[in-house]
Image 1 (cartoon, rainbow, N blue to C red):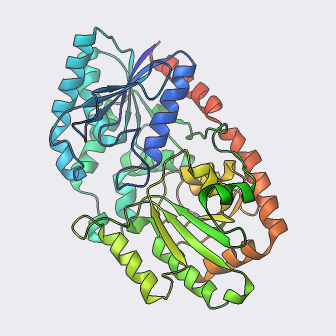
Image 2 (cartoon, rainbow, N blue to C red):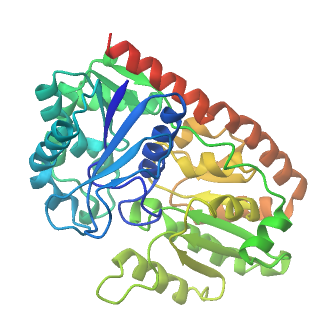
Image 3 (tube, helix red, strand yellow):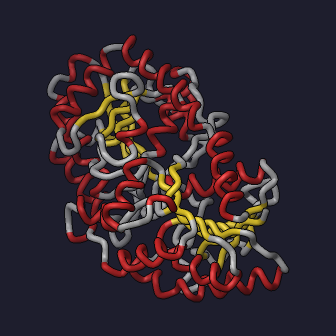
Length: 410
């Protein structure tokens, strides 16, 4: 079986923590790699953002490739600007297919812009298309906290076009399926729920002292960890305020916060407004020595950060699934998260982690204190989390995806 995997606006090989890099990158990369292990050939098509990168990369293994398509300027662009290059993206994929003499049996597109390109290819190749949105525009609109986060109508229109065209839609959770049905009037029979997976051969519990030594973390300090994009919807300001509340009672235990994501050392012209806002907030609250912005980190180092931390915190106002929570759980790390989106389905309250209301630093501070000080509770939660995460092993998830592929290609 030959699959054309479309990831238009972001490359699965990109380092995590940038503006357009996150769970979707991990999903596309790991699914493609595990499909290769099953003998399924996949070409991942993505827009080139660097003219110095070769067009075809085999970094995904098992003969599966990333194909960088050169359309528009070869650097990062706003999503609103990227939309105009989608038709050319589809045409370039067609040209690649013809030149290489490859016939694809199915298109699997990710995010709505890939789906728009997929519709063109679906009609040209007369093959089925499977779509996964990862995030939905109308949902993000409903919880947007500023005009910068409000999704344009062009995205909503695009999502509706893709919904009408896709043969099957993969939803990560029951909540996402319900959103597609109620907000987009999607036929529920065309939606299959398959959650993202985790590579338990890569993410597994590492002894905390070993993990701390590997990444240079002081052994006696207690570390809270955030991993993700630096944007307002992630609620990082709530976490910083919670750390300030803990500082008022710092006699209980030494502690600090490590934030992985974004580019804290970017030039004044390139640094994001949210990064500036968060750094200013730390300074105002007297946390310059307690909050460490590490910037982007590769997947190879993340298991050490998860295992070194007492707790991973996801204070988001919206998460379609929350893959970093699953990765941390697989490493035996307790998770505190907002009960939003997929997180509400992934975490079991009091068993594999804890929920706190989004935007509530006082409750978050109390939960952090409890996990910092109660070693037995923390170890018990971490052990149960690691066991639970094994249910999401990519080996199991890939089987479900292949089953769906076989269903739509009959």
